[in-house]
Length: 187
Image 1: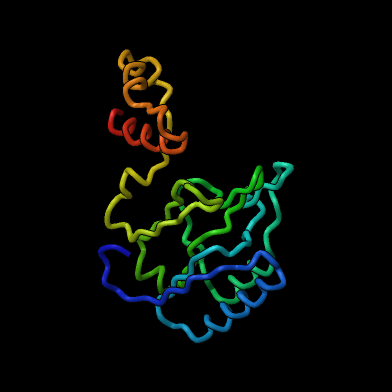
Image 2: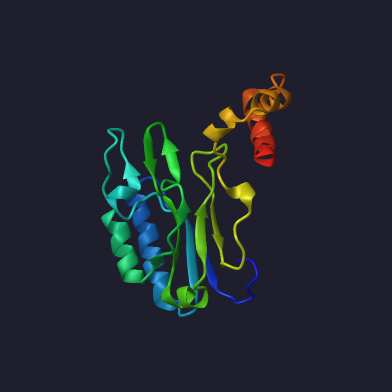
């Protein structure tokens, strides 16, 4: 957390894709919660969703909440910190879900009332990184996802900009990365 010297406990988690193994995670969080009175932040890939709207199945319909995950949060009194950015933090083909998140106890929430979570663009992984900030400064523009602006097509200098800044000698991924960096500056 930038700019804040207050201390808190942090637990990083990984929920196994196998539901039977995730039960150990829920039990361990419940046991930890009984011993923790300090500000507590928990984050990671839980491999579970809290509500159906946080998952899109192959059919494109919402999925189901993981009732054991919901029960764990009720027993531990952990709260979802919320987020800004893309709803889903994981993608596989046409399936999507919000598997990654920050949770906190009420003591942490009181100590860091301006905290916010940002889901960053997914690069080279099927999960997007998640960033937490204490609210002291806006997120840097570089963390905002690149968006092609349709208005650029009507700008008289755009065709020349593209021809000067698109590099066909690089592989596609590197060309796109380089072009987006230059397009942000040009915009």
